[in-house]
Amino acid sequence: MALLITDECINCDVCEPECPNQAISMGEAIYEIDPARCTECVGHFDEPQCVQVCPVDCIPLDPANVESKETLWAKYRRLQGEATAKALKAAAALARSLP
Ligand code: SF4
Ligand code: SF4
View 1 (cartoon, helix red, strand yellow):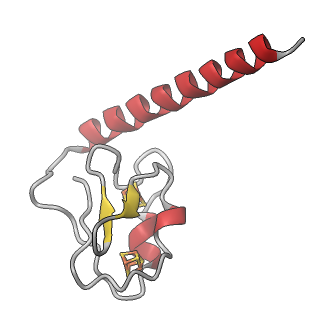
View 2 (cartoon, rainbow, N blue to C red):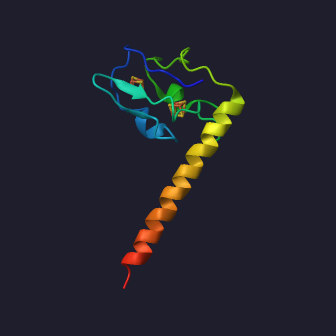
View 3 (tube, helix red, strand yellow):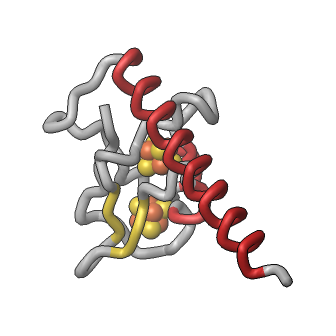
């Protein structure tokens, strides 16, 4: 299940850099979590890091995005695959630019 930032968010900027999946970003008024990138930190940490650092406790589970542990692991593997492909592409581009 992805997590959700409620309108109690005070935009303190603390959670965004803690997310290992780059799932948190500034929205129109408050920070938001991209459910396609949130794994509840499965694959990286035992506990959701954003929840650990939020000073106002405004990051509950998102009932609209219920997911099993297996689904979260699959999402983690997909994100890791995308990150690896991106890194390989960047390395190949760098190699091509070398004299
Ligand atoms: S639970 Fe983890 S993956 Fe999900 S938004 Fe929070 S820090 Fe990011
Ligand atoms: S840590 Fe909590 S209050 Fe701070 S920006 Fe993130 S969600 Fe908002």
